[in-house]
Image 1 (cartoon, rainbow, N blue to C red):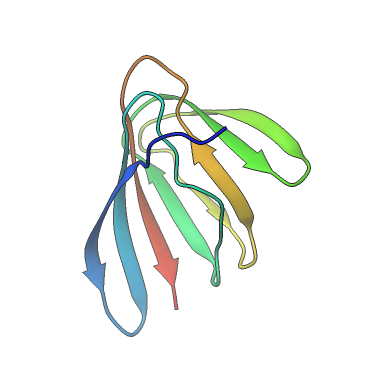
Image 2 (image 1 turned 45 degrees about the vertical axis):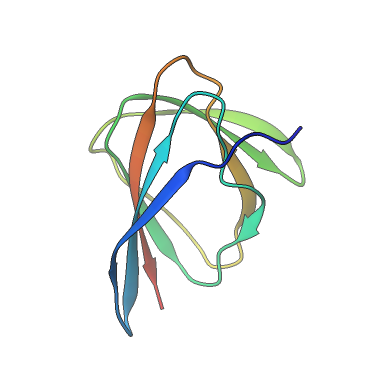
Length: 94
């Protein structure tokens, strides 16, 4: 299933990091991608986002201000099947 693209706005990019605000309107997704470096996600909304991986689909409950991290090589597609927008800030280390 292909959904419309979520909106990514790069806020900061330099030789050490990239900071991106992701806005997921209902029914949008990032598309499949692989993270080349470790990263941190800071949810700005509280709610649920879906995560498609090669192993299947999981729905994650996220809380505004409660950050999490993932290691380089993470491959997935993030999607919003909820009725309201979800926003997070992603900080990727280079």
